[in-house]
Length: 213
Image 1 (cartoon, rainbow, N blue to C red):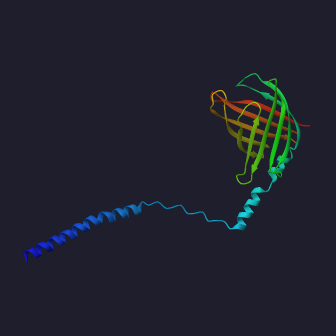
Image 2 (image 1 turned 120 degrees about the vertical axis):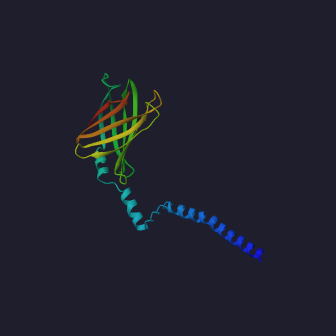
Image 3 (image 1 turned 180 degrees about the vertical axis):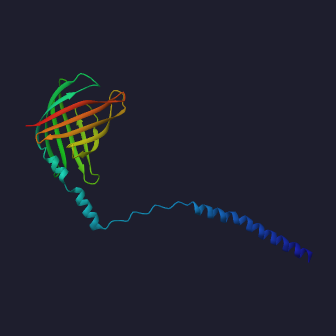
C-alpha cells in the first residue's frame, strides 16, 4: 500500500512537473503571438477594363506633349560657358533641329555646331510621364561617353521647367549634382541655364539662348 501511495505521489509530482514544463511554452507562444507583425495586405487586382483605361491614359499625349510639340522646328543656339564661379565666359554656337517622335509622345533635339574649335554633335530627349506627372530630360554628345539624366516639373508661373540630376566628373570619377532651368521666354525664344557644383558651391556653368529660325 505504501508503495502504492509512493507511486501515486510520484505520478502527481510528475504531472505537476509536466504542467510546469508545458506552461512556459504556452506563455512563450502567447508572447510571440502578441508581438506578431501583421502581414501586408495584398493589393487588389484591377479588372481588365480599368487596367485598359489606365494604360490608355498613360499612353495618350496631353497638354504637356502639345507644349513640347510647339517647339518643332530649327533653332539657332547662342551658347555661353563658365568653367567655375566668377570664371571667364567662353562662347560657342550650334543649331538645334527639334521634332516629336513615337506618335508625339517624346521630343527629340539634334544639335550640331562647333565647340572649343571642334565639331560638336549632341542629342537630347524630353519626356512627360503621365503617371508620375514629371518631365525627364536626357542628353548625349560627341564630347564624352556619358548620359545626363534629370527629372523635374513645370512651373506655370515662371513658364519654366526645373530639373535636377547627377553627372559623373571625368576629372575624378565622382558624381556631382547639377540643376537645369529651361524657360519659355516667348513663342520664338527659349533660355536654358545649367548650374554645376564645384567645391561645394553652385555656379552657372552654361546658358543657351535659342531663337527659332
